[in-house]
Image (cartoon, rainbow, N blue to C red; front, side):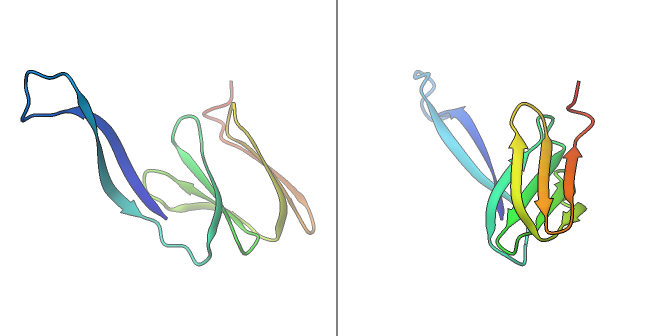
Length: 104
């Protein structure tokens, strides 16, 4: 999975125009064993949840890309868009994960 930084910048060669263009810069790569199906970032940009083709969900810290949690055999996954609430239903149990820093 690749991370990109997007930024609107003014053209330094044309100082008279206030037109902006999109600057795109590749910043990082997160190597994963399987194909990615879905990605969700917490509201405070602290955590990243990645659903993979092998029915696992991996939760990473955004700043270091270190694994916080791995949930295996997930067959149903729901994200709450207003905060980082993740509901995973696996073969044997239901998981409910929340980033405490985003919950009020």
